[in-house]
Length: 146
Image (cartoon, rainbow, N blue to C red; front, side, top):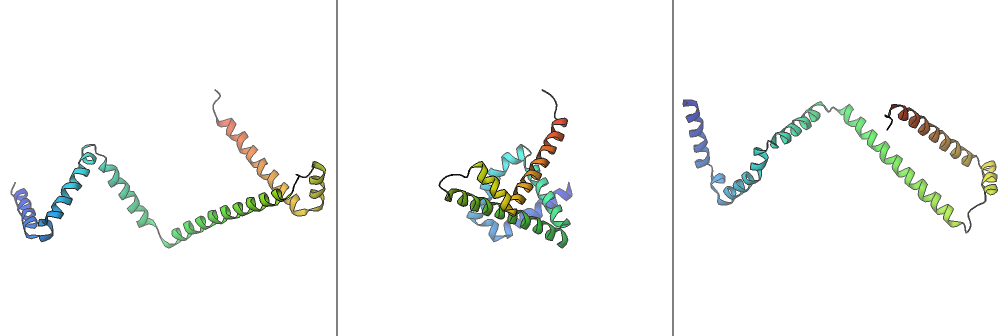
C-alpha cells in the first residue's frame, strides 16, 4: 500500500512539474489518444499490436549483415526477372503486331528450322510445361477427391 502511494505521488509530481504535460493542447491530444486506445484495450486487441511489435523487434535483433544481403539479393533477382519478362513480352507483342497477317503454320515451322533461338525458346517452354505438368500431377495426388 505504501509503495502504491509513493508511485502515485511521484506520478502526480511528474504531472504537476512537467510544463509540456500541463499544456492544454497536450492534454487534449492525450484525451483523444485515450479515446482511440480504449476500444483496443477493452477488446484486448492492443495485445496483438504489442505482440506484432515484439515479433518485429525480434527480427530486427536477429537480422545481421549476411541476412540483409541475402534478402537484398533475392529482391534484386525478383525485380530483375519481372523486368526481363515484361520487356520480353512487350518486344514479342510489338514484333507480332507489326505483321499484317499472322504467319501460317508452315511459315512458323520454317522459322523454327532456321532460327536456333526460336528452337531454344520452344525447348524452354516445353521444359516449363513439363515441370508444371509434373507439379500438377503430384498436387492432384495430394488433393482429396470431391
